[in-house]
Length: 216
Image (cartoon, rainbow, N blue to C red; front, side, top):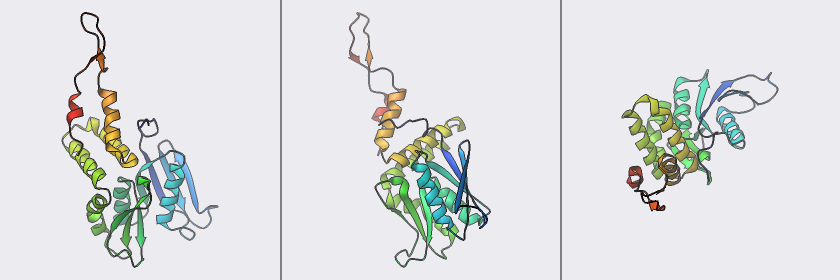
């Protein structure tokens, strides 16, 4: 499978704003370049459902949302949604009795359908603080790679931050860190054969220095 497609190399953002009952549909979606804006009628659909349905709809068109921004909402809620979206998580504020503290659950084999459940009435600032640990508990291997990429961003020039963000997004989306790294190495490595001075072909080039780096 080719991981580095044109659609995946440019992360897409989603802006959510609340509309009113006068709009013709429960959720109205428009696109402006690499940014989508969804206006939802809170009388017909909750914020949680509006975000989830919009992301599922866009996913069916091979569009992955990597940045959810709320307009006109509570600042703590806005921060929580945005941080969760960076991990490809939906957010659900739930009153169900089974959720007693914030927790991440992967609901299917599709890693982009994971949800950060937060009990209704829970302090949202605390839920934001707990998010990294909750994510690591649900997807430990992916969380380790994402953490390493974030550390690499802190130690590198800003010029490569976008490339690192794309790398993290691909790992989150595919759930295949080894496959992502392998394709990166194929893009960066020289040809696997070299021609000797005497004309003999087929000499295998030495391993790329990155290839020996442990992924785990």
